[in-house]
Length: 214
Image (cartoon, rainbow, N blue to C red; front, side, top):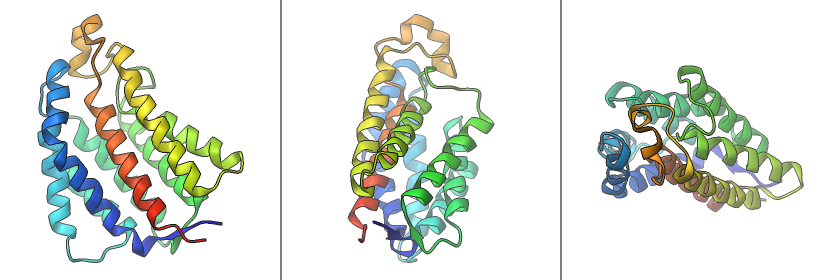
């Protein structure tokens, strides 16, 4: 069975932070069309601060998630800080004490993050939020593993499903948050949270895939 070590995974969080910072302007541009336009700025601030704190520390994946989650919950305004903060701290909790990460552990981690988000927010799939990316990505990963796919192939399938979920928000009416006030006028636009979630899941999956060992 393919696995990767928790201790080797800390750099994945630095890569995620790099992608978020790189996409700062893009995420704010998307958010500006139906929201308040600060999603990229806030995300880049939080992820950038976490990266600075983690550089040179050789932390594990779980420890790095804990640092990132705590920073997002304490330093980022708006709704996304707490939502992503709880997701990453839940990831960290499920990896605590784990030496290796196999598909089962990875799935448990993802589900804990999803449940954490759902525990503090009222959104559901179809409301034009990050859940439209996260939930189908997890479902696709689980289905791939259940059908006998390798960890590597399941990670590829997760990324594809995340990007399909992201794109699905173009055809959804926002039901939650500032953009919900636009009603039907929110149609035709990507959701910024769904977009940042797709970036996060892709970088997480690529990083995990690159570290897999037979």
